[in-house]
Image 1 (cartoon, rainbow, N blue to C red):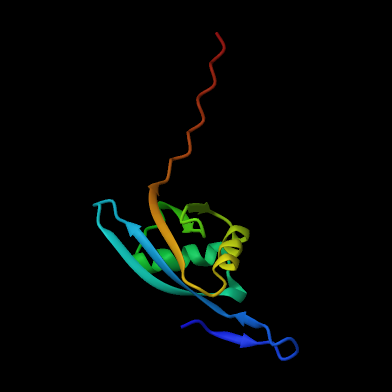
Image 2: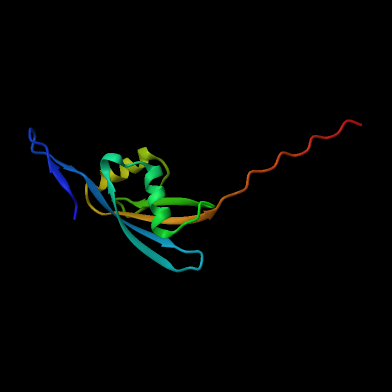
Length: 118
């Protein structure tokens, strides 16, 4: 169920929450699904990322890659609040389908030792 509020002056409906269906393919090859709700007024990418880590019990050592399904049934990569807001705008209160992939974080390269003067 999508929660909406009517603006008293314009009778325009404002979407308060967007339902999200998230698909995760685990490293073992299994596919897991979770359903979440995202409050549109406070929609930030970092909050969504945190909610997904909690829902799927994902360690901080894993890097998340998120994609949403657009009107053309194509998977669009997103990694910022502005891109998340575009996705929410597109579904306009409907179901936002998200595909989640996990990747190992690449360790920062250690500084190479400078050559010693001979």
